[in-house]
Length: 398
Image (tube, rainbow, N blue to C red; front, side, top):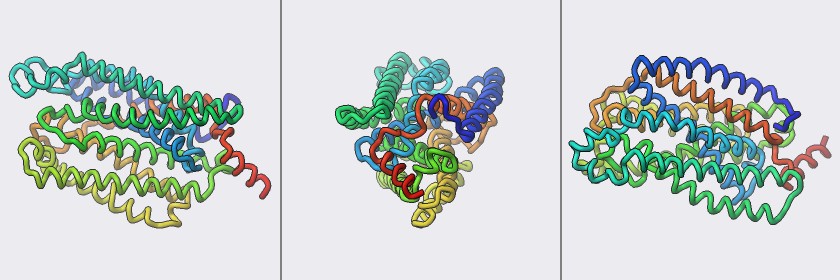
């Protein structure tokens, strides 16, 4: 949205973000004084989800510069605005560092001294190196988001073939860097909650989940904006269809990588690996796993096979909203048992009120950051030839 452009949808979204952020972050701050350990656990849960949306949107923006297609051109400013929230989210990582001893057993010097395996891993798993790595991740993400969106916005003043080539080259390198940094971030921030356990596919699980969250958010927002200009002119059934096909593809990929990890670990039957699933097949966690299997994979997969559904923005947005909620529950299933037990198991399923406060409060803060970033440019990349031709064709038809 340019400086003079108004969007009632975005204005409502900004107000909702401000309201949720103020109310629930204040509640979360009160929780800090009530139960400090729970505060840090809930904060990490909410934080990882919304960082994931920003990282996923950055990946989608770079993927579109490489592959082309209106599926990524129409929501490009949405992806860029979400990616530009990452530097601010880097500052919001400070509570994770401050609460590391409550979250990670490797950050507790007494536990490290008593555990031979943690002593062996201490060269990598120590608070100073952990903080430096997080700084490196956010630096890479922030620079990619800034450079990508800056060059993209310059295209609105006039298409430059050289600049377009630089955007493709940056995206090619950026996707490699994004894959590596996100993999290591997932290991640092989530897998190291259970430092005795490991999985070589863990980073891929998070990358696929981040893209699914970003794609679901994109579809929901584009659907809401479809009644307003300029989206009312630019958004075509074929573009909605392409977004629906991408959502189906990543839903299938999510099912594939999750089943692959389960099959490899279960068939290997190694004591170093099986605790991950053993801890999630008791105390209510199994019921959550079944819920995810049905509503994160089976039902969306069946619905997204329908061509007519994928061409209707409202119907597709309903499936995407379900996926967004399931992604939040999937993250809770992935890290919830380890947040309390550090991988030792025996933790019943329990949702604390601070988990909800963190998700809503940090979500409100993220939405506020996102909508303000979206004000910095036109809602559509008006310099893109594909988009100009589409808008011109629609104008002629009318």
